[in-house]
Length: 132
Image (cartoon, rainbow, N blue to C red; front, side):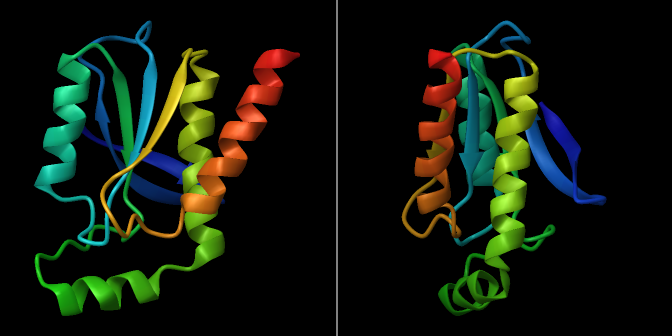
């Protein structure tokens, strides 16, 4: 359980990797709420790993974390939707490349940053890939 990196379009993106269950475990991608990739998110990822999941949580804020509502609103407004989508898909692809099955995607809390529609598309795509 540690900070890790994921390369997205040539740019390193900070992630939290909780793999206590090992590479054979079902995979979960956890997207943080508007507070950022904070201790609550990493603790949740650790609990999932302890329960038998391989967990990857990408940081959509490049390290910024807050507990203040006004700052959370500001941070949410700084996220480029295309960048967030690319990060989300790269995280899903990273677990898919490990041939983890099933792959579960979780958006943490209300205000999970810009990934709701993307998650739906990714899950539909994964279902189509698994059917073929």
